[in-house]
Image 1 (cartoon, helix red, strand yellow):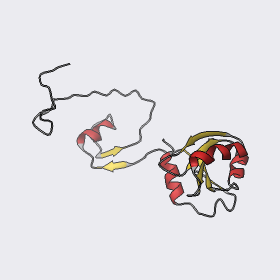
Image 2 (cartoon, rainbow, N blue to C red):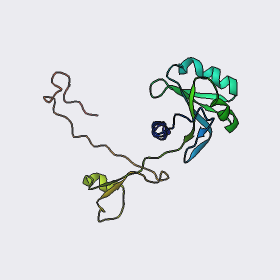
Image 3 (cartoon, rainbow, N blue to C red):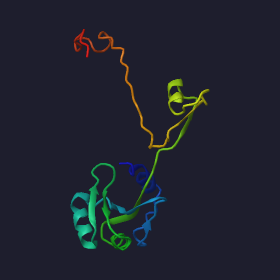
Length: 160
């Protein structure tokens, strides 16, 4: 799923001539040996994907049901290039890596505090952080008001 954002954005800005020209659309940071195939609207991915992958070689990775009419497969660049010439194929993309990256200015104080150790707070929250750190998460729940949208569905005085 982490590749979906890049793929969706890339597909929306794609040239419709890419399949006709037998071109593999390139990602800025490719996942080696993995490709996304977008099919024409009249070609059903569920039935076409296994047959197309068998024709060019490679291994079917995933058939999309809701996001796009297409599938992804593992294969070589030559196999992906061969896929561009197949009937029903609209375009072929390298699967790219993506990462959410943003800086929120003036975030709530709690959000500002969790992305830095040193004080004073810098007034920003950065959504990317190194993933090599251990993260401890503590949840403190002060309870709920059973008369607010939960009346008749809450059993009181139970503690764990």
